[in-house]
Image: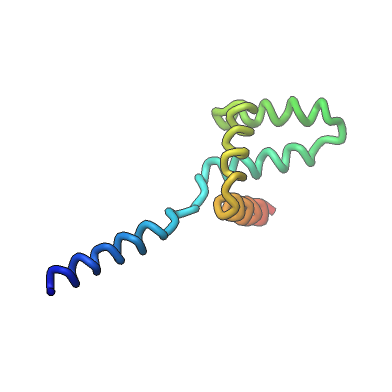
Length: 97
């Protein structure tokens, strides 16, 4: 009887742990990079100049437009991760004011 209770308890614990989502804390480097991209885009009236400035900024952060967009697309597929990213980016932008 005790073995059965222990076994049942372990099964419940495994189910509860399996139901928990991993941390959705965004990568701080990506947060800073995204904040920089937003600031850069808003700094230019000309879209061609803005695009070039964004490319230059991403290169300075050690990434490319394609890598940045792929990462952002992947994060946006998970609403919890995307919300955490947006909250972190908003906090970063506020910090930079």
